[in-house]
Length: 399
Image (cartoon, rainbow, N blue to C red):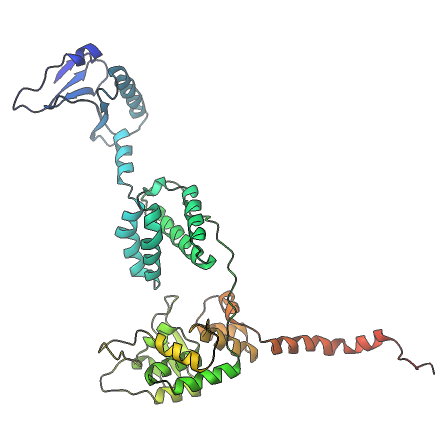
């Protein structure tokens, strides 16, 4: 091992690498492990060799001669040696930083596979990452993303014209991404999306009146696609989610107990949908070929369930003269509203809809104006006597 005092003059006069030979190093006489490396190309690079706290031999590149001077390299080597003496590991720190993935790599290699395994709504997560999160933040390492970056991303979503709900869904994906990255130890620090500034969401109060429900059911009965029409009618009669009906199997129907079992609902749990007399009558009208497992099989893909009822819904909505913005999901709102207006408690409705929190059910439970008037009249009837007393004697009472 060649050793010398690594001064500027000495480094300038270092011999070139002999033809056919590999690079060589010269170590400093004063600083242990401090060396200059000469390559066949003539490039000279400063290095520091040391032993880390786990007694492993490590090397740290200090810089290329010409980019830094010999004195600068020496000073840097002394600082690193001091940190090593205090238990530090400069090369280990470098390696850990280099191992921190970018947002895009982390999403592709870890987060999206995890979402596919554990989240029913993983497709929404993937779309948010592919369309907006990766293009905006994908090149940054996880530890490089700051709350300021999240705020800028949020402003971009708003400027794009996304609804408050859509902005919030993107921010929620980011918050979950960084939360899991911290849990998995991919980097050290804080979650930059922990408080992303969620926007206020105004709940959409859209539900059908009784006359509209009747008109819709009549339109569904005359739809040219009777199977899709019955699927939508079952949604209206059960308040179930679209996927719960379209993916239902005959094996999930218990006529005696009047239940349709959903093996895995949106919450990830098994749930049971009660079947009314009307729902049971509808099920009796469904064709069932031998070996057919789905209530609503796909007309184009044998052995698979029906994927969409969009066309049938558009036709029925027009035939029933429903507002253009009426959504299929509004049938679930309507179902909850009918139960609430009929005197059922939020707890009962929550159980029927498969909600885990009453607050979620409350968003679906719309009271009709007539119900609200009747509620106000209850107070009016109690206060009638007091009101008469406050009115005082009628005109002519003293006559």
